[in-house]
Image 1 (cartoon, rainbow, N blue to C red):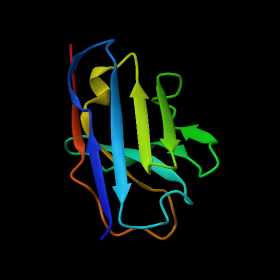
Image 2 (tube, rainbow, N blue to C red):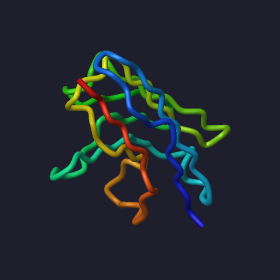
Image 3 (cartoon, rainbow, N blue to C red):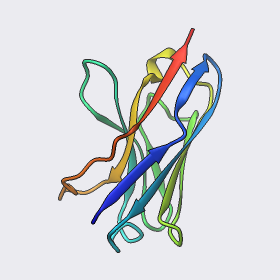
Length: 117
């Protein structure tokens, strides 16, 4: 069965860094499709913050451009998000998932990132 397990979140001060990891399993599509990191802050809708295609090109939301870096290891079905210069507005639960017009229909438990000022 499909599984997405996010890890690496935590409490960090403004300006700090965190590296999130996502382990994808249960399907052979993960290495062949675009993957992304999404986040959902309290009271807000989930938003896509970083995307990486199967071949490596990346895209970022304006709010995180220049501070976050997404990467992937297709051989291990792992997706990473390096987050630098963190701000209080980055506080959210972070999820990884495919980026597709056909949703996977499954979300992992996410990992909480809290940036304190």
